Image 1 (cartoon, rainbow, N blue to C red):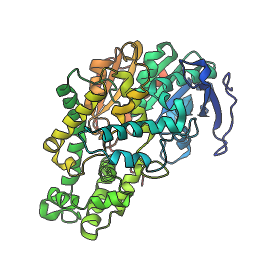
Image 2: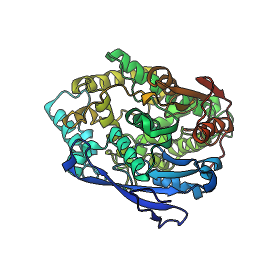
Image 3: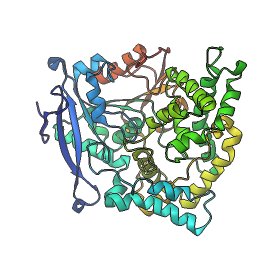
Image 4: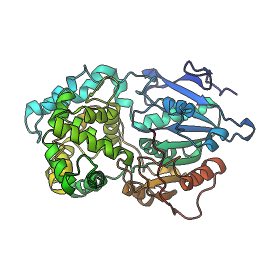
Amino acid sequence: MAGVGIDWEPCESSRAFECAFLEVPADYRDPEAGTLSIALNVHRARQPDARVGYLLVNPGGPGESGINLVEAIRSGFLPFAPELVRRFDIVGFDPRGVGASEPDFRCGDPGERLDLLRSIDPPVDTPAEIAAGEAAANLCIESMGSVGSVLHTAYVARDMDEIRKALGVEQVSYLGFSYGSALGVWFATLFPESVRAMVIDAADNPVDAEADRQGRVADAIEETAPIANLLEQALTACDSAECPIYNNGDPLGYFRDASRKLHLVNEAAGNHPDAAWFAVVSALYAEFLWPVLWEALYWLNELDNPSILLKLAEFQWEDDGPLVARVPGHVNCLDSWTLFPELDRATRLGDGEAYDAVLEVEFPLLALLGQPLASACPFYDQFAPEPLAGPLDGGGVPILVIGNHGDPVTPFIESEELITEQLTNGYLVEVHHATHGVYPDNSCVNDYVHRVLIDGEYPEERRVACEREDPPRPF
C-alpha cells in the first residue's frame, strides 16, 4: 500500500514502522534552487479493513521531530489514543531544518552567536550594537546558505502538500500540537482542498500583532501573564513544612532569596544568560514537576548547587548544548517577518524595549530570572521571506481547537482568540488541564478529537467544554 512517489522501506529503528525520504523544492519561488530531502515515517493502521486514511502529525517546537512522535507509538506513553492507531496510517515528518531532514540547521560556530548578542546592551543605539545584531542574524545564512531563509512555516506547509501528493491522495487529516497548531492553520489556509479533517491542541494564535506599540506590548503582557501566574501557583503550592522551600509559610520569599543565586545556573550553562529562565519555566510545563522545582531551588539556595535547575534547563536545549541559535527562534523570526512585514527593524527594537520596561512592574517574580539575551530577530529584515498574501484564516476548513486554561506555553487566551478573531470556521474545546497539551489524556477531549478525525463530525456548538482530568505521571 505504498504511496505514489514514496519508496517506503522498513525503518532501521523498528520494523513496525516504514521510513522514506521525499525531495521537495528548496525554494518554491525559484525552481533552480534545487531540492531538500524531507525525512518521513509511517505507522500503518492496525485495523486495515477499518482504515480511514492518512493522518499527518506534528509535535510542535518549531523544531520537534515528527518522526520521533510517530515512533513513540511503541512506548508505554502513547502520543495517540488506540482509536487513531487502529484507524489511520499515521505519518510523521521532520520539517525542513529539523532532525533527519535537510538542511542541517547551523548558525555559526558554537558560542559565536551568543558572544555577539551578549555584546548588545539594550537599547540598541550604537553602530557596534547594530553591527553585532546584523552579524548574529547573518550567521544562519552564512552557515546554511540561502536555504536558511526559507525554513519558515509557509514552506513547511507547502512541504506537507508535497507529502500529500506523493502519498497519492486528494486529502489528508492532520493533528498538530503546540507550534503544530500554527502549522495546521498555515496548511489549511494555503491548501484548504487538501484537508479532510483537522485538530490542533495547545493552540497558539500566530496572528495577534496590534497596530500600535501600546497594543503590541499589551498583547505580549497578556501572553506572559499565564507563565507568571503559574510560577506563583507552583511556588505557593508548597504549603507544608515537608516542602523544602516552605520557609515558615513564605515560599515566595524563599524564591526571592534563591533568585540571588540564579547566576550559578547561567554560569554552569557556559555563561548562557537565559539558562535560569529556561530552568524555571520548564518546571511549569506540568504540575508533577513543581516538587522538582522546589527541590532544585533548595539545592541552589542551601548548597550552591545548580545541577537540578541545569537539568531542567536542558529540556529547552539542542543535543549539543545551550546554543542561542536554535530552530524555534529562527523559524519564529522568519514567520514574524512573513506575517508582519510592516513592523520594521526600528519598530521591533522599540517594542522590545517597551516590553522590557514594564516586565519588572507587571511580573516581579519573572523579572527575578534576569534580563533576557538580546534578540537577533529585528535584524532578519536582511533576508525576510515574502509576506503572506491574504489572511491566515484556515481557508474555511473546519478546525477543532483544544484550548487549555492550565497551559503555561500556549495560554488559553491564544486559543480563544484564534477561534474568535482568526479562523473562519473554528470550533473550540475548552478545558482545564495540568500540562502543555491535552490529547490523549482527557477522555472528554478524546471523544471530540476522535469524532472529528475518524468520523468527520464536528461539535454542534462552536464552543464546548470538558472537565479537568489529571494526566498520568510519566515516572
